[in-house]
Amino acid sequence: MKLSPSPSSPLPGILAATIVGLLPVISGLAVMRWHVDRGLTRDAQHIAAEAVRQVDNIIDQAAQSATRLFPLAGQTCDRVVQQMHTEVTLEPVIRSANLVRDNQGYCSTFYGPYDSKVNPDDYLNGQLWLRANNPVTPDRASLVYRLAGDELAVRTVIDGRTLARALEQIEENATLVLEVGNAFLWSNGSVEGGEIPDHPEHHTLLMSARYGYQVHTGYPEGHSWRELKTQGLATLGGLLLLGVLTGGVCHWLYRRPVHTPPV
Image (tube, rainbow, N blue to C red; front, side, top):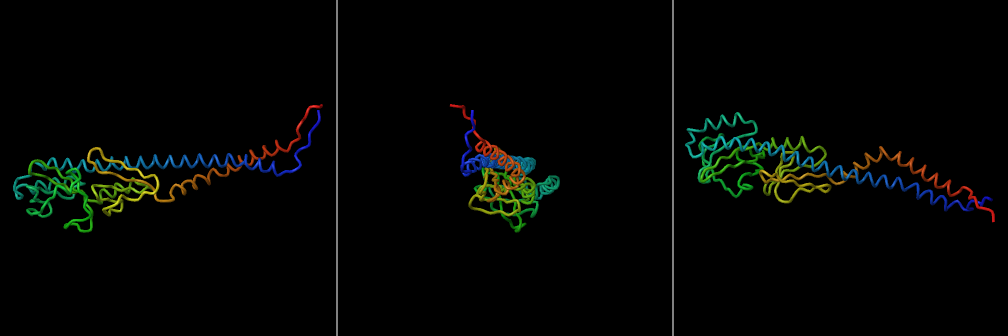
């Protein structure tokens, strides 16, 4: 047996070693990117589900309050307004309440007896109306819950800040927006109408099964890349070391003498 000489030119060996060495680095980064995308999608879905749960709970309290007030609808305001004040005082998420007869609001915890037109078409599924402002609080959003039957109705009003705080506590790094009809409530308390909010990455949309509103969540542009860089910096050293070792072994195998049997 004799040894055959190793290749005279080192370039093929270096090229092969470089390619083999890069494979674990590229594969590791690809797996990491998949893991980051999957994690952000899962987080967005979890945030949306938690937002729906908490907003449902807030609206549930308004609905329960409206149910307790509904027997008062149709009665004279002077007779029932004190009971309405008591209900609003005891229910922390309710800012105010009013009674409606023949689509005319006639008794309010703010005004007492009053007269105001109520348009049922303003309400999503006849129940919810998201307002950017109103005469009582012109700089503050509110969500109105409407409970109607025959020609009578009760409306309970949720302060928009209550909903905004709930969104803000949930959203973490995501952008979380509540959509009611054609209006959108952001976590800073502002209300905008028109187009669906822009979530460039991992946009998730979830509808409330009980009330029909929708929650949008997602991440701003470049968030996935920033997450990938954060995780990548922690593991890049290990991937490079693995690549160097793999490439070194490949280069050694390429350059070592080959044993050939005697002729």
